[in-house]
Image (cartoon, rainbow, N blue to C red; front, side, top):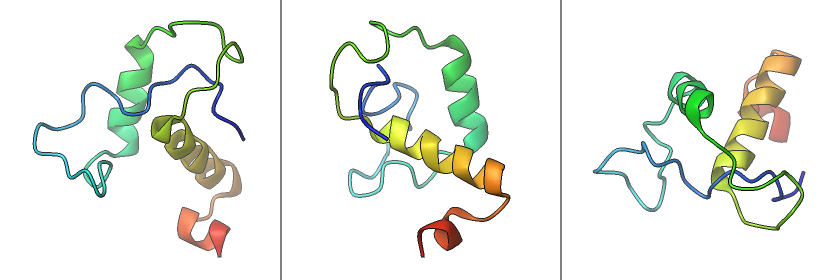
Length: 76
């Protein structure tokens, strides 16, 4: 995994009262998938390194779906 997807650090639909220590505490997979349906990449993937918590979160969700195991068990 790397940070060249073109996804932003945080989605722009995160709650107004988000916690900077855990911005995704209320952001579930349904919200992520809905956000991705309308998000337009600003450049082609791989064109630029840009740190993306959103991209890493999405990678974790994809691992859960593929392995059918909660993320906490995958990383332990």
